[in-house]
Length: 325
Image (cartoon, rainbow, N blue to C red; front, top):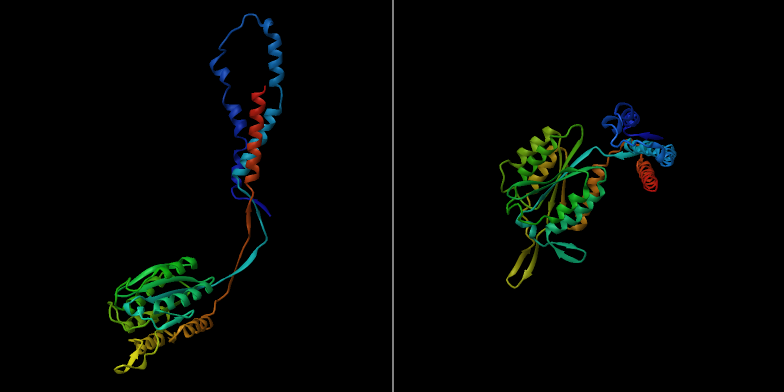
């Protein structure tokens, strides 16, 4: 279907006619600049001038150019048939621990040993890429919780800012309760949307103004569902020169993380390695499936450039005729 974005612009079409009718010519307002007593001597020149002025081609070109200009200003467009698209109604917040313990290298990624934050970035990045249609936000926490990215459909920006994060950027400690509180504050602004927080940490709450369980109760009251992910390999005993020693440090408070998930109707996951990490996100995809809400839109293709090109062509031809007259 063909339509105009601003059809009221066609009201300007009579403007040249109104200008010609109400604004007198310059000669009529100021009188003749030169009086010639012997008109017969200039009869031939006057006849030629009259014949040239009687040509209607410049006037026709000007009118066509004006019509083309008004048409371009009205923004013509071709609007296609309605197209149905699916959209999710879910808000997802990712809260990621940046405390000093996330530097522990107890994960394997593509055949090399990496720290916990690097493994988290790799797996969480793939999770973000798959959440097409969801709004995603990013919270980073250490001594305090910081909103790195508000809720947005721009998954590429969230992924980039996640990759730019670094351990100890927010401090060395772990403020789990503050991270939950910040997520509540951000998600409270939204209405009639399913709200989910995925909290990833490898430690125990050691900082912040709000306790984790207290924050979980507030989240439950707000309808915020929290999935908690415990990061870090299980310490293993290995024989050394001085007897058995534990490898891989883990201060994970699984009891609190399980209580947070249970209080809000979520679930607790334990990530010992990158394979389990990936399976956790697959499970989250199953537990929190993308809800399809059909919306329709009509593709629109602007066509204003064609009448604008016609106006420029008519103007160029008119100027050429005046120059060669």
